[in-house]
Image 1 (spheres, rainbow, N blue to C red):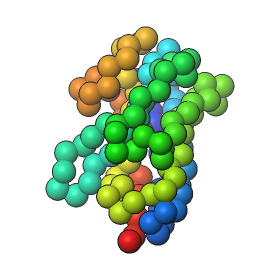
Image 2: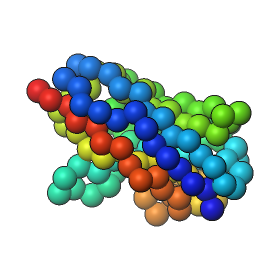
Image 3: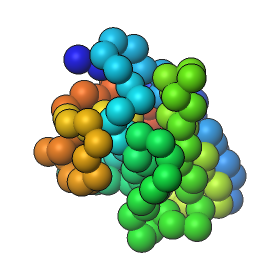
Image 4: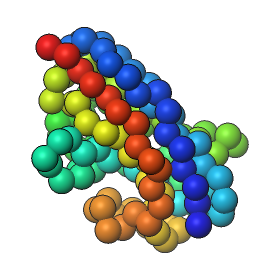
Amino acid sequence: QVYLVESGGGAVPAGGSLRLSCAASGRTFTNYAMGWFRQAPGKEREFVAGITWGSATTRYTDSVRGRFTISRDNAKNSVYLQMNSLKPEDTAVYYCAAHRLPYKTTWSNADFGSWGQGTQVTVSS
């Protein structure tokens, strides 16, 4: 089991930036793909960005590509999400998640078995 704690959420105007952080503890972190997901009120949780264990591959949902950047520092057991040019439709609770299996690169909700508590991001128009 890996334990995840997100931080860095907040309220910003449209066009602003935020950097989310996720600190991991527990089982080995370095062998697992990590992802960021979000859930807006009344909507299902959706995949936002993912990164493989060695950072060789990143994946983004279309609506954030070019504006968000995912990264990780395995020495610090941390994952980050840099969010630029934020839009009101980015408003949601953002969750950090760890893949269920090592060395796998699938990105659905069901593929991730450990989740943080979430951090709120609010973008005003």
